[in-house]
Image (cartoon, rainbow, N blue to C red; front, side):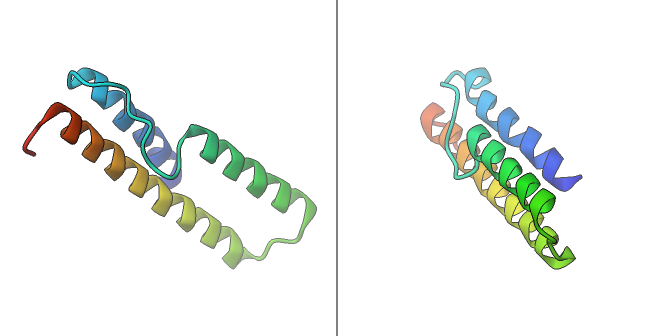
Length: 86
């Protein structure tokens, strides 16, 4: 659930730049295409191999971490572009 929420939040943070008077932000290590590739790799791995439970959890935690970094990068980019002091 946290991963899905953070994936949506990354897109919201990107669009936030438009509402703040700047441009659409694409910063961060885990953009839309990166998430699509990650999801594809995870799905293929689980379909073809016996993935242990700890590995599935590790893949999810990695995605959550990368999504958090992306959200922070995008918000920081919006603040820098618009000159906000928040």
